[in-house]
Image (tube, rainbow, N blue to C red; front, side, top):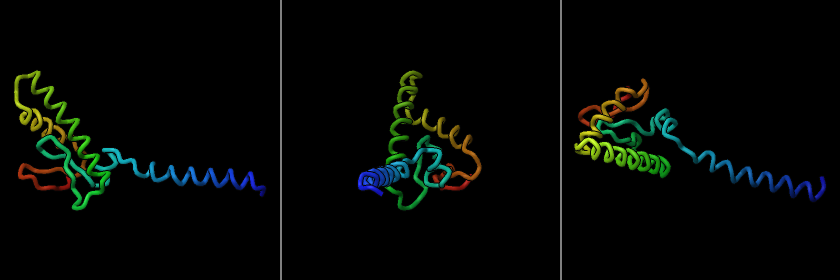
Amino acid sequence: MTQRRVTRWSAWILALALALPAVAAELDLDTAKTRGLVGERVDGYLGIVVANPSAQVQALADSVNAQRHAAYEAIARKNGTVVDAVAALAGAKLVERTPPGQWVTDAAGNWHRK
């Protein structure tokens, strides 16, 4: 192998090695739910099921919950009601629509697999 070819292969392997952690680092909501890391709470927000969540799981939950809260506020404002009422209604629907095998809370806030 020539020096040029070795350099190209080395650069390609380095680029691939650097890209793989980024791909592995991506965690979407469906994957997190399927893995049992997060679940739906009856209050309309996403909850973390695992005891010691990774930073990725925490960031995902925080992001989803911020988006949901903004949506609930907009709906509440439009309908002249309070955010908690909108969130609770959404939570009931989200828990109801959760597929079997994923985690949800009951009215007391206890986690169980649906």
